[in-house]
Length: 637
Image (cartoon, rainbow, N blue to C red; front, side, top):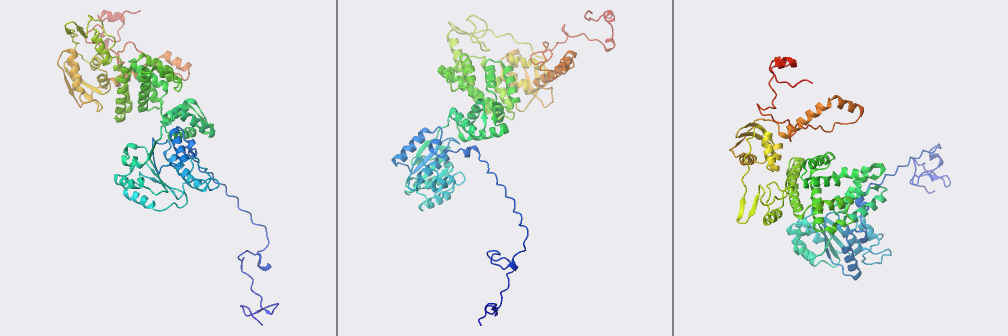
């Protein structure tokens, strides 16, 4: 009888029985004998389903990135040119896209790449300005995984070796699509050798190759490169278009946003859609679950000053009201506004007022906010173009000083002090007109005195007559008197340094010894010496010292104010008011007896105002006893 592998025969044929399997076979226990099946029992519990992972959050700038040409906002000229080029089959082989950040350069490059490779829904379409978005070519390019669309960052791949690798890739035909597209972002970062290596490829590329270059610095791209490309300049998006775009996206994100917040975001975006969407994303996150984006929250987020506050500061300095200007500046600083931002806002407002003054019809522009149109028009009507241009130049220079200063708030205040000082002075053009008309020009600015009046320089029939010099001032004996001389002489900048940056050490007739802070000008001593000699008619010596000296006048003024508040705080009436009105605060204490620096007036020795010396042992005498002793006390009521 035949035998099997084991040498035995099964029962039917006299051959041996095969051994049972030791476990499940390839297909489980279905074909296994009953003895080999696992024992019957309750079915094992199914594992709990794994919760689905939430989709990663996509920022608004990526979520709402334009997919077709019509989605690009503010670029009508570009859209019209590309549509006509595709319609007539006149698509260039090299494009150069330029513009500020976030206006859509790379996005436009990707749309062009899809337009060149789209095959349509049926797979038979050709190049089109309206790619379908659902064919394999469009889907691959949208997902950044198409083998024939290569994006290269020229900022990190800027050498000649990188360009040689790119030229090597030009030898191969497209692997999948119709056209191989090379997108070079920030192309101005390429080296000179890399640009030279790219020239021939740009001029005579293979027929299935398209170059798209993008840059924010067109002037840094060699003219030889620009001449081989079709250049498109993408414009900054106007604020009104940005406001409408942000409002639309906020609605899609179930977020409400106030008009003032929209205006701030659009202004801060500075024409960049991507920058604005990033700020909108942050503002919506700041709003939390309520989804309400308020003007106040956006102002705090951006660190901006209120537009009304900026107008207040500008009006104050133009009216030479320095205390109000510094007070409003301090208020903006307390709200979190950066001094540099306030200076930039003042510069922007000055530009707007200058346009109003030069072209009055612009005041009726409905695109401007109501506050700027009403208050701006009223202020522009009172100021001349020369005054505004002078303020523009000083603010422009002041912003550079604020950027370089270790204390930006102090630098910004110094700019306001200078602006307030020159606001009282006529412009050079006004001075010439007054002199030609026969008027005089006062030393401190303002209206000219009539001919024949005292002071100033007068135009006479025989030429120019000089008025008699003013009488010299008495020699100062205290530091605040020296500072007052600088103030009276309209030396606002010098006075500010004497107020904040000088510690007086010793004051004597004809001699001043001071310690100056590092931020003071190097020639402060020479300026002070010239001023004192001019105003007093005497020779002065100004010495710099390393001694500690007294506190600055500004520090003395603050200390005196603190003392006055402390005394007023303990007054019974004030305490009663604070007790009756919880939450009330003592705002300011006014003392009519103090001088311009908030200090008690200086009483000269031997003057009638000096109190008579009373020995300590006689301080407790009664009125009658004091009178008998010959002391001059005021009469009792």
